[in-house]
Image 1 (cartoon, helix red, strand yellow):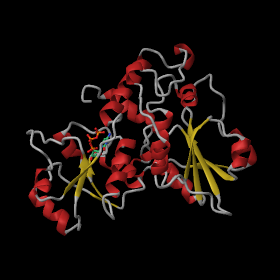
Image 2: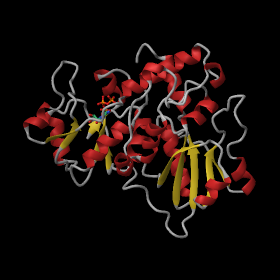
Image 3: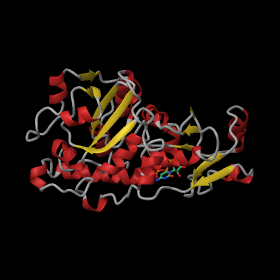
Length: 333
Ligand code: CTP
């Protein structure tokens, strides 16, 4: 399956899951930045940042680079011969080149093309739209949850941009590799919690670091209201269900709690037998009126571990940086 996988979302993750089910091994062809710019307009994330997320998805076996948007006969020979690929898979939406022709005409002609059903209700364009609406709200001064009154519908308060995506129990089981792994006896459980909004390379770095500190990574995805009170009324961009699916698709997450308050409690630590609570320091800057330290309890218990911010391959990316990029270049998006 080839693609841009810009701001890789659960629709992309689902596409990869379905593609993997079409065969034995899934190779992803990541379209380079220049090629995306030429055919679709500028990507929000660069190739390194897109790569980090795609390779963290649990269904991906291998990634190849420098793939053209147009699957031309010459490149097809490279796919079949060098990479020993048998079929190309794509969502059932049309994929047109700038001249209006079908990017997959050649593999279709050879009978080596398969489609999977596109996941409705999410796209990169839609997420960019939500970010633009969020940055507009921020500019208008809706920074504080108190100023705007808050909402409990999930997603940000951009009204028309609110997601209506519904997660089923089956989708959760599919995304979490069969319903989450049970905690093996004696395993060292590491708890990582956060908003995990628009699951990105920075999140991948954090979960990788957590995995190195233990045997089992338990991810707590903050409730929408918790994200809103800490980051402002224009957050989160994706609602709690969407953010949870993003974290679940990551191979480093063994289990995901879909909605936790942002303060780690003694109850949670006892219930899951948590040996360490991991966070990147400093945490997202808190608004003046939010409760102080979400990691106070694990700090007092001596089980809090800080992870240094990464630098390689987009590991220092944050949700705020992504929103800023889109806001700074709104004309391009
Ligand atoms: N895809 C999907 N469901 C979505 C979005 C994408 O099944 N909601 C599939 C596409 O059909 C494609 C693969 O994911 O096979 C990679 O998509 P990509 O090249 O990133 O581009 P788009 O299809 O344009 O995705 P988006 O609209 O989100 O930018």
